[in-house]
Length: 332
Image (cartoon, rainbow, N blue to C red; front, side):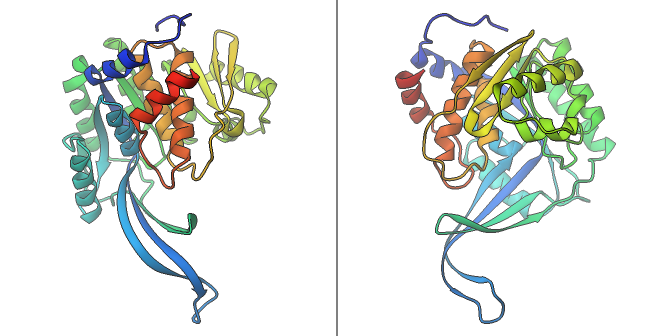
């Protein structure tokens, strides 16, 4: 891992360097569907709002949103996940291709539905979300398929993101196999965990939970203070033995922890419209920053800026590289 730089990075050069990077994203792929409308009355059939639909759209969610953010920075994102043999899988592939992402690394498992989430939004407020999914683990054949595809490109991979939403793709066996493969080829691995396999991601480069996830994992409440953040990171490090812990803390920013030392990064004061997908943006920008030579602390600051920018938008949206570049020039 590069040492922490004492100089302000050359951001123009940094952002240009992303174009040469290839980052694999392994995890739970989702299709996000949106219905945007207006509420002006209550239904006479039941005490629920009536949505007058104004527009509809689909976006890439979960691990696919991580890949979208990586691609938005100019890097090549290789998305490894599982989909069903259904209409949502077709829409997901179409949207991937529209955004310049290859669907070639998606494994098809006909017995499971493609994970999708339908959000209904009116006057910039979420009214309801409808999920279509299974949390059943993928089959051993699908595990083998994903691992074989990753092995085929590992020599040209600059980093791997493990993006876990507890939808069944990142099984204990696949996690262990991917981490071992990355170690053999000296490829850094960043992890965005969820509770089911929280402590199985051992010896990753960066482990990135949020405060709620780490509290749930340990079965105790950590307050959003610097002292509790330090304690949480210390306890977690003993479990997962990552090179770095990046603990995201909502309005308190984030904490980067390594070798007994914690550095707190304050939040960026921008208007928050929607936090959907902010975690995906953080892990994507963090990983891209590491591949471009930033220290873990610098990459975390870059990711913190990116999260603030996407939170100013409604719905899960990819980072705008131009906005991020200008913000870095002004505030880094």
